[in-house]
Image (cartoon, rainbow, N blue to C red):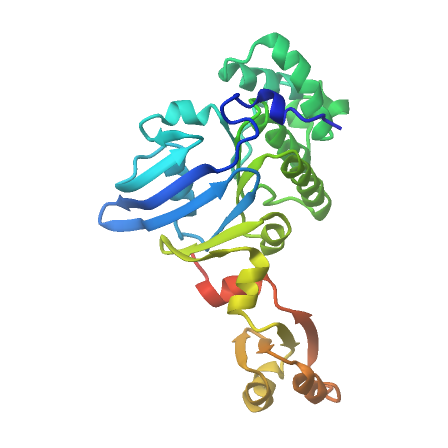
Length: 321
């Protein structure tokens, strides 16, 4: 296991400090006449995993690009790692690690060479890299693949290497843009375990994801945005309890819609029908379960409310392009 490189590498002025790693206040960004981000405000505290959730087109990617100084905002202020952005974006970015949506590893280099070259971009000397890279490879489960070429790696292995690469400069903030998209369950769990280790070491993480279970597992706080505006922001379970009924019964099958219209809407506090599934939300699901138990034309699942229920309630079920 990689021993902690967090405390050792942080600048003295922030080592052990508490407070905000990223502060966004009233962020506005327009493209043409369309306002993509509309007065967005949030803070990310040192040592937490902050989730930024929203459907496609909600403004997540634009927000990240503004925070990194890759595009200039049209309004509002951003402070990243104590530096004003975009004025001092370059100084801020050297203290940030980014895992992009798509892997952009150099296919002509080996695993180790990818880390060395990336480290040199940050001006890290070879002696420091020589001591740091073996720990990063061990952390990512890649010690046995140190000399492997990128073309020989699986998608999950490349993703773990991309995570290790984002840590080569020992960043104060790690930005993960949909880090497990396209991975199988085993690879997803490996990455989750690695991220939990980083949080235990004191790292700060900004996570965007379309996997609600991923956000619920990792994020201590999260924000839901849509059409560039903040809809809700709090701890996952607090948001769920505040916006969604505690019990959910999913009813499936050809007869689900007819059952929901006649019985479900009378027994549940709220019913939503999508395709052949009726989602019944209730404070107490006992009457619903009693009605469904003797029926043979439908199947059903009883479960507690989760983050996906919250997301759907706040942003809708319609498909986004």
